[in-house]
Structure formats: structure tokens, C-alpha cells
Image (cartoon, rainbow, N blue to C red; front, side, top):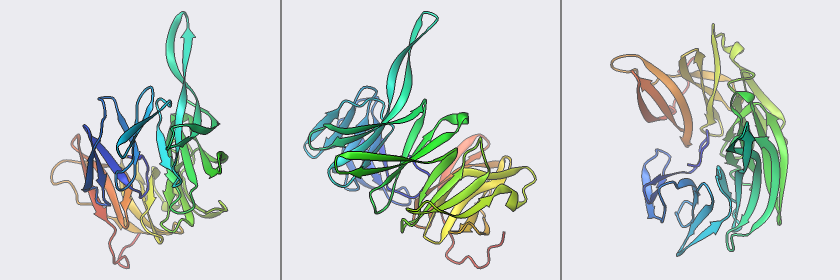
Length: 313
């Protein structure tokens, strides 16, 4: 955690221990916290001085020497703003009755600004999306946050969130795309295709949101395939995309302008057939590939080669 396709700090909850991971997903720091069995890790600071845990009925922020409880249940994303506050997204739980049977359902998603000194909810904005799962992509420098609200085959909606004093300012970005993440400089944002919609990867200039580059699966001359939702900036100059024929995906290296450079070959399976399931950016020049070999999952961190002049599309 946090969830995201692009490069960013990652953490793991292992029982009652929170681990900070480096760009190769190696444990570099640990902290024991009070966490009951159904706790979910949402975020942490790099020094693990602050850890955010989500529960069905509350949010718990583990600070140095104390725990702060906030009345937000089922939170799916939490981002530190750098000024002692936290931006949290969570659905509104509703009780729905159908033919005499009552059951819990998720209503509109809310974005909330939480003061970490008191636990007070300073501001709340309704996103207007329901039955969604949200992950957050913080900008590396300017404090803004991009939210990706996925609604399965029904598409997605994305939003830009900024904090202005005690107010949240939320603006719509695009629909039916997947938000990957920013380049390290924060000057560009990568959007990848939603599986149910257009087969186009897009790079936007930040903060103008002007489209500066696009790449479609049709341009890659696949017989029956395209560009997957998985992709990431791995530097200011290069992007990796998962793409290929149906059930035969590979890793395509592109420039920051989505000009294809070449295919990155992962080690083939020694025995049996392998299938690339996903790729995620994890560090400068690094991505992790999840591969299935004869029904068994295997993950490994790969480094983009330093010498790329010999690669060919």
C-alpha cells in the first residue's frame, strides 16, 4: 500500500508490524502497531512515525505515543497533505431494502479533510460516484492529488483534489481512463486505457492538462490485442506499458512522448507456459512484473536497461 500503478512509496502490514519498502520492495524499516485482525493499511510516512489503518467502522491514525480514532469507516485511500492533515476517501454506507430484505450497500463516495492533531473533519466533498473503488495519486511536489474512481465494467471517473486553507477543491479530470501517475518532475501525468473503453494511452501536461502525447493499440499493429491498463513512468524520459496480443502481453518501453522504443524481454519460464498479469512502477528505472506460470504466481522486480540504443520495436 498505497494502491497505485506508478512509482511511489510502498508499505506492508504484516500482522501487527508495518514495514516500509524501498524501490526493490525490500524491507528497510519496521514499526509495531496496535492492529486488530480486520485492519487494513492505507498509508504511512517514510519514517513510519505516522501509520493510517482502516476498519469497517473507523479510521485509526497511529501517531508517536498515541492512537487517533476518526469516524470514517471503509476508507479506501488516505494521503498526507504535509501540513498536519490527511485527505481521506470513503463511501457512504447505506441500508437498502429489496423485497423485504435489508442489506448494506455503498452510496456516494466522499472526500474528507482530516486534522491530524484533533481528528476533526475539516471539510467534506461529495464526488458523485457510487459503488466505486478509489485509489489516490499524489503529485510529487505541488500538493495536489488525483483520484481514480473505478466502477468495474461501468467505467471510471477521475478527479483533481487540492487543499486551499480549510477547504477541499475538487475538479473532474477525465472519465473511463486509468490514472497511472506522474513523472518524477511532476510535469506530466500518464493515463492508461480502461479495459472496457478506448485502447489509448495518454500523457497530459501538468497542471494545464493539455494532451501532449497519445499511443493506441492500433498503432502497434496487433492482430488481436492492445494496450493494457498497466503502465508507469519509470523516469522523466521513459514509460513502461503492458501491451500485446490477447493473453500474450509483454512490456513495451516508450519515451515520455509515448514513442515506442522496444520490448523488454523477461526471463521465460523454465517449464510450462507463462502469462504476464500486471506491471507496476516501484522505483527509479524499476518495475515489478507479476507472472503466472502453470497456475502459480511469481513476482520479480526488473530494472530498465541503462543502454537502450539496441532495443527495437
